Length: 378
Image (cartoon, rainbow, N blue to C red):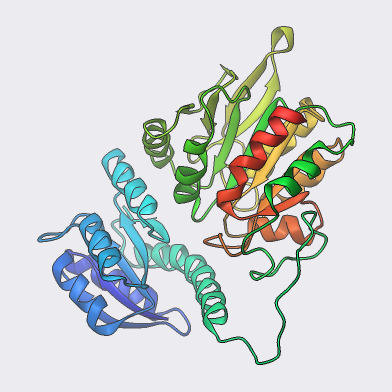
């Protein structure tokens, strides 16, 4: 992994460089004190990764991202953000512009502790990025002479789907047949979404395509620290017909509203009075090293509202959500998994597909139609 480090702080450039150098098979090939030099380094060195500070002189991080896109750069970008509300707003913009992921700057005054924190944050992201780059390179290889293209794939996934099989996904008529076949499942009252790396970009594509009269609430767990989820909710609310909010404790669940779990806390569902549904925000421990955790939300829905949910698992590292989906499936929950080709990281959906829990595996741009079919027809 060849990396360029861009930050206007000499201290943070050194910390990030030291953290990266300590990781296996990683080489820092360049450093930049401002955005203009960072862009030139990327164009000249063509690294696999750019770690990009948001606030820099001459060109800020967002301007560098725009310029890279204009130049057709394929270098992946991890944003380095301050842990502030303003940093959260700009980080959301960066992720929606195509940044791979983000890390926050350590606030500890201890240099060794800060370096260890950066290394811990970076290593998981570099592993996921390495896998993504390997898949991209395989897809770019020319086909072997005599190989045949796969025929139409089944919409019900019983084996892990390859990128080629899921490039376009099933047709609308196939989806329609799948979700309206007589299975005895009622129309879902709740839509549950679990997502991690690549989530802000995926949600910014998916949610605006859903109508403001959808008729169901949506509850989302996006792996993210505190402050950043509020920024994401406000950003999405400006793009969507549906109302999008960061969830609050004891909030009543209403139709046509999207509730995003607050970063750094757990979110679960509980029954309220007269068949209402209530959100509870807790400080319960992390699950799958995540807080908020997808499994935590899905498990509460399976316990209190069996057979009344639809679950969607989108791009993300790890396997959070797979156990929760398994519990939901016991009562006929309909499950959609995002396909490998359209994922930034094919981890969480892969865990669902590998365990044969997905009713349908679709590229991101086909998921809104599938949601509408299930909601309208049961």
